[in-house]
Amino acid sequence: MKVQKTWQKRQKLYPLLSIAFATAIAFGVCQFPLDSLEFFTYDLRMKFRPIHKTSGLISTVAIEPLTLKVLGHEPTIEEHQQVVANVLSAQPKVVIYLNDPSEIPGSIDQQKAFADFVATSGKFIYAVNDLPPIPGDGNIKLKAPFENIEVLAAPKTVDKNIFAKDGVTRRMILSADSQMTMHPLIVSRINGSANIANYRGVFEFIETQQSFIDFRPTGTYTAQRFIDILQSPIDLASFKDKIVIIGRDTLETSQDYLSTPLSKDIVAMSLIEMHANAFDTLLLNSSPYRVHKWINLALTLLISIFTLYVVITLRPARGLLALALTVTGFLLLAYLLFAGFGIWISVAHPMLALFICYYFFIPYRLIVENRRSWEYLQKNKLLTQVEELKSNFLRMMSHDLKTPLARIQGMANIVLGDANTLSDGQRLAMSHIIESADELSDFIGSILNLGRIESKEIKLNLKSRDLNSLLLEVINKLSFLANKKNIQIITELEPIFSIKVDEDLLRQVFTNLIENAIKYSPENTKILVTTEELNGKLMIQVADQGIGIREDELENIFSKFYRSREVKNTEIPGSGLGLYLARYFVELHNGRMNVESQPQKGSTFSIELPMELNS
Ligand code: ADP
View (cartoon, rainbow, N blue to C red):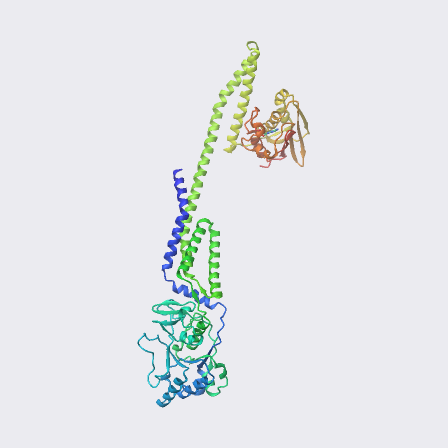
């Protein structure tokens, strides 16, 4: 008992302990940088979301394999100047050059001519793959004769030693040491939004402000060919008011390319397209928004608590299903938030917490289950022991009572037989003694039978017997009782074949039924005992006009020690064992016993026995 109480006390503490565990696990898990896993799921979300539209404000021009083939050489600086001149003639917003002008082949004079031409246009920018200079260091400048060309910092980021460490480009740097890079600078010139903090998804990272690029698949921005602009500049109108990015897409050097969340190929996307994506991310303010780490912690905590709840309370199969649904639901939520609203919630930490909680607490769950079944086992053992003790006690007691009782019965009969010495009062007392001794003897007989049933000791002693004569024998024996109440026992016994039965057991059955009919009937009533052969079976019925049995008690009367409410408080003697034993004995003969009854009208007990006992 004491053990059980401490166990129960402990069980009350468990919800609190579980929450404490879940919190510890959530905090612990969130300390692990799971960037590789997180960015893997980020890339998947990016890959399978609906494709975002472009702003339509970007045009691109590429020096690509066909240009090189047609020209037969690298474009000269004069050819570059011609292309820039053609593009500028269409009045773009700005021309962004990704190639270093100082590395374009040409003579000093040609270089100077190019530099002067583009610098005076006021719309030419060379995008250098570098961070902005530290304040005080002035602007980034090219060497003479290109020193007047505007150079802006447009660094390409690669996750090499940080974040996912997989060499993929996912971010852009918007400012470093409070100096804006090219993309926000140009966009602020177009729409006047000069405050980086106003952009969606901006985060601080080692003295820089960055955001994730809202990548579209490669090929979204189809570039015009350098050669087409040079030789037949027919489609120049499309450059009007655009940000025109001119670069290389020759597949010659990997520096002109990058891997994106959509493809890990090292030449997955040209720099030209990366810059186009970066511009559109700012122009449309559509950078993916990574939620604050506290929100991720809260989600992780929620999932941990839920997992523990499921593991501890649900059955294993259901628990597994619930967790599978949770994982699916959570992943779906993460996807929908990203696809619909560009909101990026952490997936790696909550999922890891879920797995840890699951595997950590399954053994605990097993311990609880074991403990429970151990308790059941103990209880069961105890119950069986008590049951055994009870039967042993009853059997012992009954045996020990039997001999003195037989002596009382014998002596009482001798005294009663000696008619001369007794007064009327003494004679009455003597017959009461005999009656009570008979009742007690019946009771002891029943208890002994019960003991035999429970220890499965009963074996049928089958002999061919005519049941009609057995019934008459019983009726004859009980007629004395019936006469006392002026009850008439009528018999309607059809001639039936003798069948093999255990005579002693059936005698007890019939005695019980007829005795009950007499006991539970008022004076001056009738009892009808019938036998017949019906559909190959023997039917024996005992019907009385007695007090009857209520419907809700009909089945109970065949239970051990059951006595109806009606008779419990009367003086009618009884143990409640008779019908239990009678039905059991009938069933041993493969028969059935039933009752129909109406309160205050009477009861009919029916026994159905097979003609042949196949046991
Ligand atoms: P008991 O020793 O109490 O008669 P039984 O097992 O023979 O035990 O019967 C169980 C109960 O069924 C009785 O206590 C009584 O309430 C009810 N019962 C049995 N036979 C009759 C009957 N013929 N008429 C009314 N009630 C009956």
